[in-house]
Length: 182
Length: 182
Image (cartoon, rainbow over all chains, first blue to last red; front, side, top):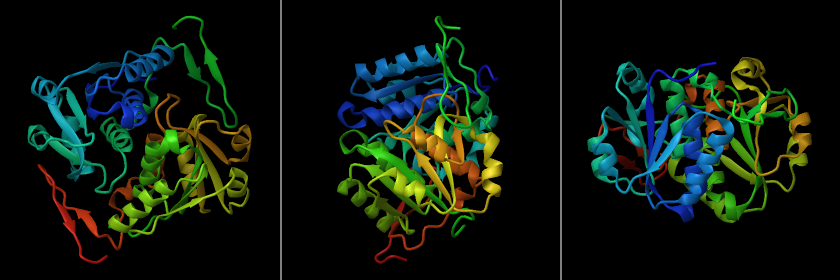
């Protein structure tokens, strides 16, 4: 098992709209956690139930992934001490940039768009990268980007303190529960 | 550009619920198309607006991805002439099975769960594979599975007949439109 990843990644979800985006934002944040990000910010409308879902998953499944609301994108990107990677279908193919991104040791803020991404975000990012130039999903884009950034090591990531864990099965389901966080 | 993928994949989305799943199912089906699947089935409640969204994307962005509703999972899995891969967090790590799956030349049905996956689906599948044992998203699970199945070749897939295509940019957005399907 891998304890934590060599590159520190924080994910930044822009423009969350609770009524429309609840499930997609939840999936995005869970993918961020599962694929090795340490933390996430989000802007848009603050959503207690989104925050509660993520907190509950982390409590049950381990690790210490954190989610924090921010009132505007400028304070997050402007205050970031490290490099900024913006995932956008309009960017350059991520496979052409990932080696350079990986070799840069500074913490990365991975920005993932919502409904309308302000034009300034493109200019404020060190890399604008596309996971294919086709329309699909911010969830698949983020997962693929982190998978290549971490070269697959994120698949063996350890989540300490879990109350629940899966015991892999060829057929059927097996879930282990622990009375206390282990 | 790669015209089409060596392994024929059809994605099967179980148990779509229009009120709850619309955006996640749309993202899942767009990820299926973008990462090289030829076709998808879905069960649950038939959803004209989901079908229309996917048809419109395919019309604009090219290729001939098809979506078809089926009234029950048994007719799709039971009638499938090929092998069945079920993506589930309870399965064996997909990275341990993907080489074997790739070397099998038969068409693959990749089953992606919805709310409640019937226990029989585990038994009816040739492989039950997990993209990490952590909770995240069917969208990220499918994208990662197809990416590894196709060894990254899906990132260069060609979508003939597109009306729209992105011209990759380091900063900003550039979209080309074609008067007719090219």
